[in-house]
Image (cartoon, rainbow, N blue to C red; front, side, top):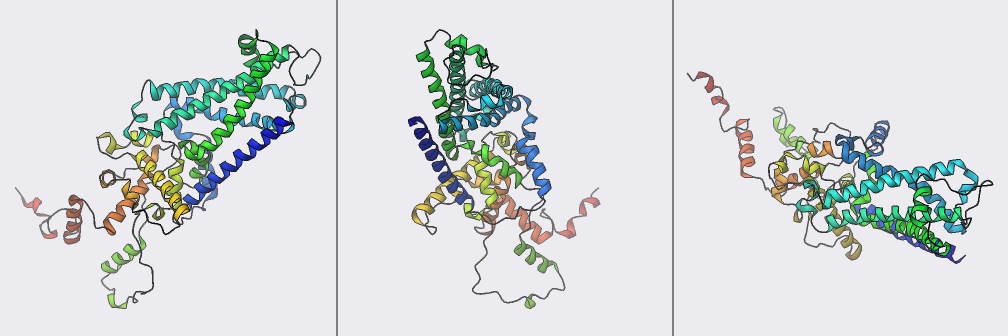
Length: 446
C-alpha cells in the first residue's frame, strides 16, 4: 500500500514537471511567425513514416545506422513493459500480465531483453566513438562543454536503465526458481520465467545469493528502472534528446517543395515588376497607409523566424552530419550548420525565459545575430547539402538566408564582393563590370 502511494506520487510529479516543461517549449516555438504546413497530408504522412519512423536517411551510413536502430527499437518496444510496471506500481501487484498473456508475455519480455542487450552494445559503441575514438564530427568546437556532457549523460542513463532491467528480471528469475517470487505460476511445474536472457544471466550472477538479498536486488532493479524513466522523461526538455519526441512532427511539417526553391519576398517582387514594366505608371500606385506597421525583412531575432524554424532548433540531434557534409566547413570556413541550429535553440530558450520573467516587451539588448556571426552567414554556399543529409529534415540554410536578408535589407550590410556584383547587375544587367555594348567585343579579338 505504501509503495503504491509512493509510486503514484512520483508518477504524478514526474508527468506534471514534464508537462510544464513541454508547455514552455511549445510557447517558445509559437513565438515564431505563422507558416501554413497543413497541405498535402498524404505526402506528409508518407515522408514521416519513411524518414522519422523508418530512419531512411540514417542508412546512408550503415554502421551508425544499425547501432542507432538497436537503441531506437529497444526504446520503442520497452514502452510495452512500462505498461505492466505502471500497472504493478499502482496496484501493488507483480507481473500482473503474465497469468493472462502466458506464452505471449514470455515472447514480449524476451524480445525486450534481446533488444536491451543490443542497445547496451550500441550504447558502449557510441560512448567509445565520442570519448575513445573521438570521431571528428562529434568533437567539433560547438560540441565542447555542455553538449558533450549532455550526449555522454544520456548514454550513461541508457546503460543504467538496461542494467536495472536485468537486475530486476535476473533476481526475479532466481527467486521464481526457488518459488519465492511474487509472480503467479501459470501451470504446474512452472519454475522459470523462460525469458531469453535473464533465465541464463539470473542464475549466473545471482544464483549464490540469499532470498533476502535477491528481493532487495529485484526491488532496486524495479524502482531503479522506473526512476530512470522519470528522470529521463524530465531531462528531455533540457537535452538534445528531445528529438525523440519532436522528430516525428518535425518531419511531418517539413518543406515538401524542391530544396532549391526560394520563396519570393512579395513586397520586393512587386517593386521589381513595377520597375521592369514599361507601361507601368508609378503615380498610379495607391498612397502608403501612414498607420500601417513598417514591414521588416529577414530575421533579426528568433521571433522573426517561422515556428517551423524554431521547431527545427528543438529537433536537432546534434549528430553533425550537416556540418560534416557542408562544403564551406570542409574548406576550413567558420560555418557549421549544426552550430547554427544550436545557437538558434540557445537564443530561443533565452528569449522565452526573458518573456516569462519580464514580459513580452522586455529587451535584453541581444538578438540571434549576437549568437551567429556575419562570417558564418556569408560562408554558406546555399548548396542544401545540410538539408539533404539531416536525418529529421531540418533546414539550417533557411535560417541563414533569412538572417542574410535582414543584414542586406535592414542593415545594408553586405560583403564588398557582393556589393560590386549587385552594382554591376543594376548598371550593366550582368554581374560583370562591362557595359552591354562592350560585352561582344571578345569575338572581335584576333
